[in-house]
Image (cartoon, rainbow, N blue to C red; front, side, top):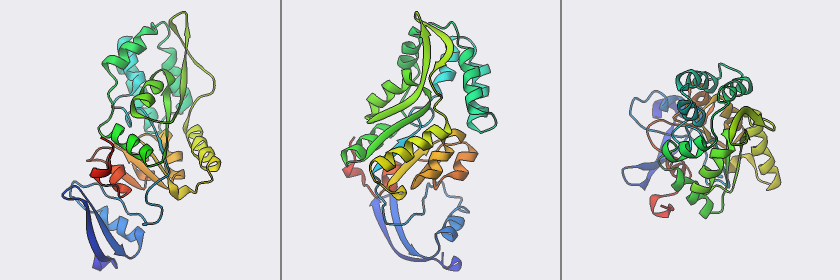
Length: 269
């Protein structure tokens, strides 16, 4: 650290053996570059102490707050998971136009019984480790928690209620007489929409960017990750990791509580 012009003032354990604060003086960019060369299996973040605890959490859903991509799991019931999952992966890497890829995949679900959504929720959708603790702890401390998804309201509604989000935004699968039509009702919730929702809520509450936290895993999360005070890539695709202030590779979503200096004894479990 000293070789890089960084001087450690003190180390404080947030929770012994799990998370620690290392207070230092020196250039933050140089600190990030130095830490990026580490080979230890650790998640880390370099940030200022001011505005450390956030007033807002805005999060992606699929492969972030839950462990699966809902459209891929729906496709499995239709017998076309492999075909759709390949497109989902490419879209999340930023290799395809998000809206075009989404509409194309949804079209392939035409004719699927809408009851399959309930079955999929029951059988396939699992909350990510630490998700409920993260959301409910932040909410208990006065933060506003928003779920924004390029997936579907038929899933986001349940996930938001289960985890304790205050609001949710997603795409509406069009259903005619209990059958998926292969279309989406209304405007698409895409990367720009996610950023717009973040900026709108900041303005409505007269907050500043440093008071906000955004987390996601795909290319369509990059604008909101970059627009937030703390942008986090959670087990994410390379493009999202590159855009983020912090990437979580080894830990779970409670790492975002440690990032705010909130110790385990203060979590809502």
